[in-house]
Image (cartoon, rainbow, N blue to C red; front, top):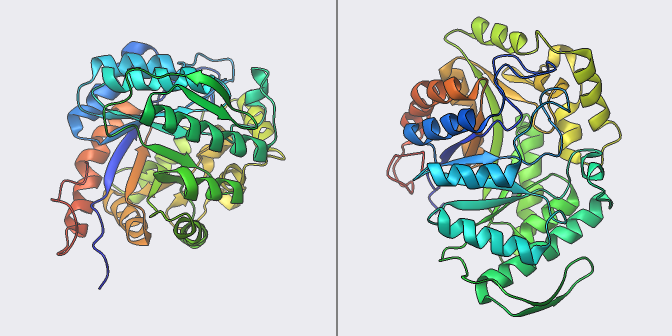
Length: 376
């Protein structure tokens, strides 16, 4: 008998680069001020989203790289203080903050938020971005460092220390965390499609978070990932990250997609092309591959990758078409969906009101775990 599937959860995104209905210009229409990001968060909380992903960058990734950018950890701390229910998935790069200090910071924020934070470990990083802060190391080195980072942090959260830890990149001499996180501790999310990423996910991650691709390579990635989890004695969980461009008609949706790039500046196009040139990040290379009209399939469009680092692919279509696409990925094996749309304030309403209820109705089947509330 097939095990019942858990009900999918739907989360949203915090646009720390800035926002608007155009991207790729030198500056955003809406700067990433605390007031604006607070409105995005409180609106998503009101709409019933499960969580919010706060990415990490060392330069702006959707507009000119010197455009205003909200720093991740400071922003997350402030947003925890003004929200009450929604979870925050905070992206962190190992090696930027010493693990002993990070473990205490995260434990403190876990308590302040009432246990509402999770951690998205980002070992790969954007081409040249770590180097801005004087942080070096190969792609594989960073994944090895991430392994030790998670291990040491998890031990500190579990025991409180004093902890002696002697790794290749992480060394602790009596580190202490007090108080330790009230159980359950923050979960670990890990993104990536390389062999190194999948090995680390199998041994350490609670959730493997994938950027959307067409169904065939997406299924192949899940198959590769599933092979590793049993060897580590762990059950896999998968999350999917995608943009959405949804309008009442298909033609209007594709027009809106084109309009997103209508003010893209040559400097930004050049910066983004340089960021993925010769990248060791398998997922980033897949997002940025060029195809005719940027159409990866009937509903998938990766034009956003021309002006945005990392995830650059969107589902484009009517509410029903978007719901059908997301339902197909749920049936493939994804249970968590982190969505975004431009501008994030208004599009959170559109997706919550027009798309998610269609998925709830289609996927509410006998024998499934969950009560029909697919937003957590």
